Image (tube, rainbow, N blue to C red):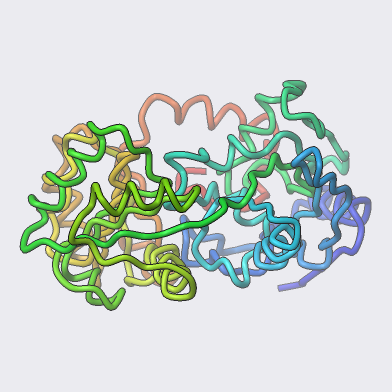
Length: 375
């Protein structure tokens, strides 16, 4: 396979145009940290990487906005922002090596979504290169700018199946004055879910609210079925959390950071991971449906279930077919993806996605199969 790493947006666009003109299938990506994620992209004659497009294009700390090229690593971006007491709270897996373009193209997010939103809530503009060799700008550097909003939202989470993201504009958030995590351990998942329910009914609004079952907790150096509550703000506010969550183990500083780094990596740890979308009231049923390691965004209705073989994945999928849950095999070994149906029930939106694919890539050349084997 031929590999290219363009250094300018114009070179990237020209590489796409030339390959498409020759009818070549293209594997488009960043650092490759998400190769186990989503569908396979086999059969490509050309791989194009954005890793050398890694500059900060514009940064206005006072405006809480930044524009960066897609190949900049999420880790480098995080360090740059932290120097100004600012952050982009996406919490993606593979954060140390992932490019920011890859994070957005995969729609990655994490534990702080319930307060700060998802990737599409933080992107205020982007530029992308088409297979025709055109560079297109969508949105801008103003938070309330809505020009081209639908196009940029279409590209977020598309796994590079429509076009190549070249640069991204983000709205940023200030880093809280202080943070603290409260870990509550229970003998059963049902008790952890009950504690979650109490918090959701209360006045406190934690930044993160995750439940990990006992199997996952052991991997995180915790014990039992755990409810993890992260809060940010003044010391007075954090003291209020301590009073409300009496008996919880309190983590701060390096211990807190290490825990949430491990939580962020969890979706990429088991050999197979199914991402389940479900009503908040169904959390216990989802956790009880699998005996493997499980992690739930307990305030957002998303749970990650870990499996060690394809047969177990198929059995779980068949057993939950009648449930009103969205089900996607989000992570799997590349060589075993063909053994499973990664997105068994895509719903009516698939037809619209297929029409968008035909509009952007009528010859099915760009990242074919990466959208969970469907596009």
